[in-house]
Length: 118
Length: 156
Image 1: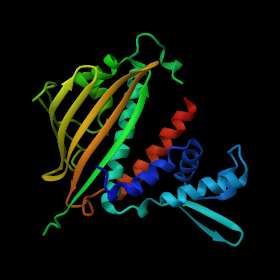
Image 2: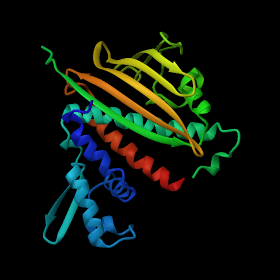
Image 3: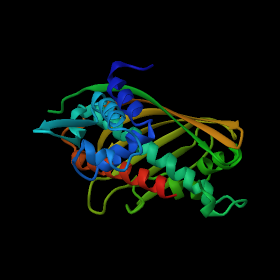
């Protein structure tokens, strides 16, 4: 039973389903950046980056503000209400845990060396 | 007075692991194996851990930052189908305050090259979380971990 409380989370996790957008969030988790700074390490056109940014903004994960000719982007964790944030933390903690399970399974696999993880 | 409220949420997370369903199942079924990956803060001392993995059996874990809030996890295993499914109900307390009651379902499916794991949590989150210490910090740590996890993923 999915209820409306999870809708913002669905948007957030859909936004994070894309590897380019995850790179952008990773970069922004270190601090605000301009659109061109965000685009710099990415092998795509500026307009493609702007489209990805629009998805992140729609999800509420990222906010941007234009000052003069520079649009600065930042992570916006405050946008989720407390319950949603809390639920998102629970989900994020499961995500981390299941990633650690993956690492554990690779480390303990007798058939493969730990370095052979993709 | 505590502001009483109950928020319901359901979410599903999927992973594909390059391991057999039997190995993935064992990682949940074995206390030592589960301890190696399942707990959020490896640096927190565990003051109590009961792990009785059978239908009707319980898991009880007490942990938390030294001298800080006690995080208490209590679960009862309701349905266990070896190598295929685990269903358990659990609640979480921060000190004496129950913050959530959930049903967790872990389903394992054999797929080419490994196992697809589908985790579904159906929960009720109780009485808000606003006045609980560390929420903002927790969000920040979560985002930092997210960034780090992606960095690790790329480096690996």
